[in-house]
Length: 142
Image (cartoon, rainbow, N blue to C red; front, side, top):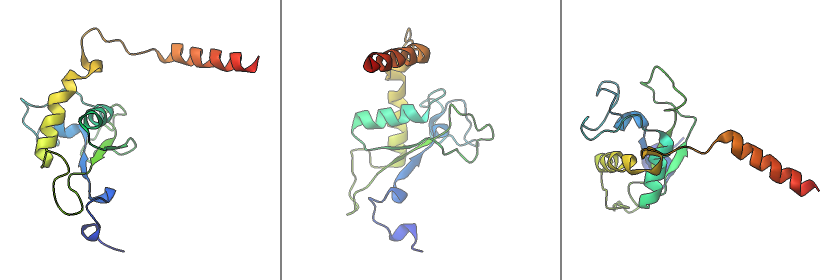
């Protein structure tokens, strides 16, 4: 079995990991918050982190089934983590954010700007979209 350090930097095993707890304002440093509370955001989700990174130009990998080891609650809403490639195989920075901390701060800064975080936003109803999908299926059968 080879060590992770011997794999190229483009290998997903070498990508940095971002858990929502790293940028959660409600967490303490002891609970896993990695940036200052002033910069942190309340209740981030792994999907929001993934969306922000994808919008900026990263190629993030969302792992929904992973849980933060320090999180005793194991809440489904905050479950998951995102992997991001920080460096190319030759060791150069892949994006202008060169460190983990810069990426954490950038993500925490952009999450409040997401459409889903804006006042007055209502999420599309799951029941109505399911009914619409069922209606489309029925139309195809005719």
